[in-house]
Length: 120
Image (cartoon, rainbow, N blue to C red; front, side):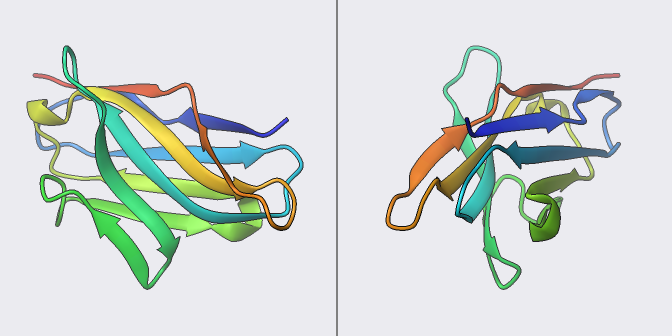
């Protein structure tokens, strides 16, 4: 069974930093892409960042220049370095991955989420 597990959330003051991690586990052929979404309180889930390769990443305008997505393929792990955090970044952060359980098939998987609160 393929699973995604996030970690690294917590409470941080405005201007602070956090680093989220997400590990993919289980039996699979390959991972095409990994990314992050977030759901602020009382709002819909929104895109944050996406990583296909180190030269092929994408960010939401609201986090460009502050967040950095990276990936360690040897560990099946994606990271989200979040700097200069503001209260507007408060949300549940979800990891997403496009994974091939076997060649020729690809599905989207989601983690359970990790909470990030930015508050003084």
